[in-house]
Length: 300
View (cartoon, rainbow, N blue to C red):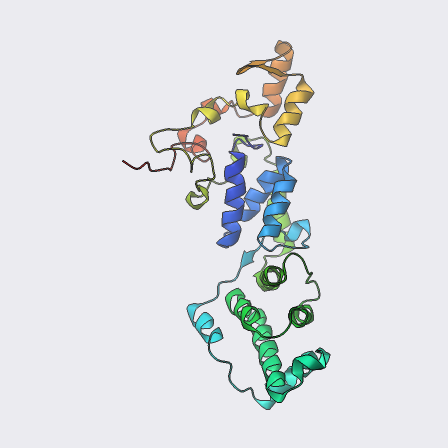
């Protein structure tokens, strides 16, 4: 399988990014960085958008969701109760914007107010689950829901299917993001390690090794450790970064054999791209951050 800039399996890095975004793991920033330095921005963008990260600046791409408690979820699923006059008045700006058809009866007006108050409160508490519940269970039109989301956060954009896009917007609103400065500082730190063994900051998380990934589809009796120990034969079919580097150096492949134009090209290539020795010289712990035994348990 294609290798990334720092010799992870590309499909496993993609899965790691998706997995970390879903479980609110801040390591997602690292997996995004690995895709970017591997020049696989298209994969990164597709994953971010599929997970609801629409319209974000580069520095804001990776953030952590805040956790909604079980109590909050249960509370959101209760039949909405009557609001106090003060809370009811807070819904007036939203209700006033609705099409008269949406609120032509007193009950409909009250339901619209309850929806707004519940959704707005859930978003303020950064509770994705509760906010999503209100959207999925409202009887208001899709346009009305988008109007509510836009009032809560002016950066909301309409993309994809109506319900899917609304839920994605909720995730965007409810994200608990670290400061842009902190994220950029971390990114810059990793940039200073590009090409080094120490740039391999994390191991692929176990949860990312799904049946669609290299090791997730590999039976436990097999290992792909040889791919990290002798990666040169795989780089011509690697990520965009390695394909470009191989081509620029004039390196060719004959079968599985790597053909350097001359010894100077070989020495320069290794000096530039393997400053910390070839991976075969790395420790087992370093190698096993990205390679090792398969995870597929075969049926007997």
